[in-house]
Length: 168
Image 1 (cartoon, rainbow, N blue to C red):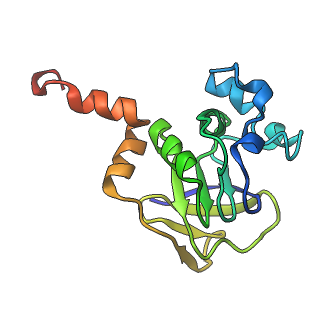
Image 2 (tube, helix red, strand yellow):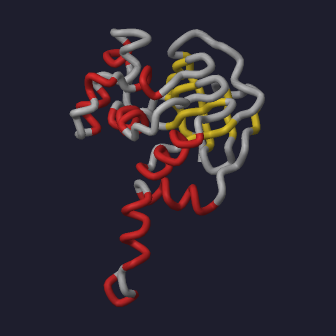
């Protein structure tokens, strides 16, 4: 299923310290974290992000420390998905664990103006830069990853599966 949003482009090696600056790590509420996401790169960016927007990263997006505040802040800001050529391993796992969809697109996404329309199909790992443009094919996420994201993260996924059949 295709979803539309505005695309926000960031380069290579965007680390978790940039995504969520250390001074906000005492916060735990995703919405509060979302008010500060990416402000290390652009202090005004959190005020421009809107629910359903999509981040486009380069190679190694989310590298650096293991802070789960980074994907949690992105989700709290309303980011619908992050598309990147590659992801830092720990960021990738943390994002899936909290239910933030990711698409690996090894070819990358051609740069467009910030806030351009973009369409994604998370289940297919596909990206389209506006209606009617060619589809860029990324790596299709494994079904288990899609199931975890659809459940809202790993804990809701496990809780749902752990309920006895009579309680479901």
